[in-house]
Length: 355
Ligand SMILES: Nc1nc2c(ncn2[C@@H]2O[C@H](COP(=O)(O)OP(=O)(O)OP(=O)(O)O)[C@@H](O)[C@H]2O)c(=O)[nH]1
Ligand SMILES: [Mg+2]
Ligand SMILES: [Zn+2]
Image 1 (tube, helix red, strand yellow):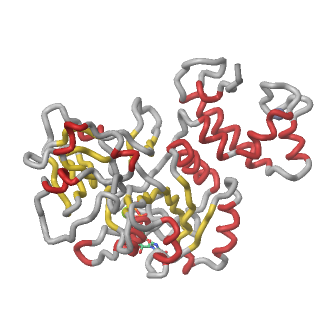
Image 2 (spheres, protein in one colour; image 1 turned 30 degrees about the vertical axis):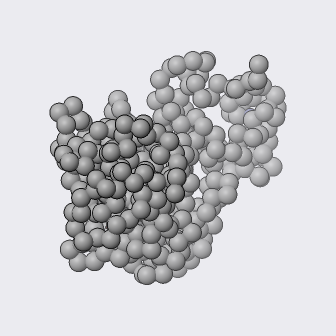
Image 3 (cartoon, protein in one colour; image 1 turned 90 degrees about the vertical axis):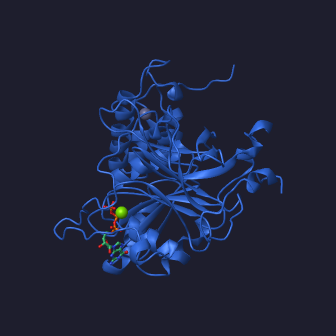
């Protein structure tokens, strides 16, 4: 099994509790990470960051949960839940963090550096409910985040048991991006596991994001089979506007009962776009693909003659509200992205011409 970290790494692992040993592949290890190891590092133990607190890091090892020791220069904010780290098996100190396959970052207004949401996530479950929480403009922000991070987004519509017509929400959600899949479920019911099975399983990592109160922790408890003291706390929502009370306050990694890993995150109040030109182009592919047909190369699709995008609106094939949301996110992204090269100050929007 050349994907594994090598026999030396497993010898060094102490048994912390009675959990059965997992293979590194079970934990999400792959050639992408194995290729980063130097020969000198084979005596170290590979673990995944399971929770990040101000002065505490925990990890998931092949034999169970571990509290890591922090070296003097180690800043916990440099780590994301889901990260792979190399740990000294004697002292449990982190020696090195491996490069990430994917990284979900949250841009907030005013903040200089983005917040790390999770790393090495294969599928992002964007969770919303079949109620007042459902908001296409907000879902598009999460989609841009997933696209930019290199993860596959899936829209998870909870509380289908409380809605009259869940299929209507599903249809609206799937229209937000080409080939996007949306599912409806009751997060409290066991059959939610079957609905989400296509994206879960050994070695797969999924993360739950969305507003407070949509049922992320409820779904995590269902997927991981956790109850009682072991369960993630959940909280009732306000009756008048369906808003949650921010019950979950930190990010954490949990094993899914049928294999794979799920990351719970606190509900987000806001999500800004920045450095997301490629993610937005993917989100709005139908607009991106029309733009070359506009008469002017720098057409803003606002007032120019010969605009192919506005022609599509006139023909009824493009929703004018969608074009408005495209404009708003493009403007926000341009404003928030530091000027590097090109007239629009965003290196990824500069057309990549051959030669
Ligand atoms: N009927 C029904 N209730 C649900 C469903 N999903 C969640 N709930 C309820 O919604 C409330 C909020 O659920 P949580 O799991 O705490 O929501 P959360 O997304 O984790 O919220 P934060 O941690 O605050 O971000 C709880 O009362 C849940 O029991 C569902 O699919 N159907
Ligand atoms: Mg929660
Ligand atoms: Zn145009």
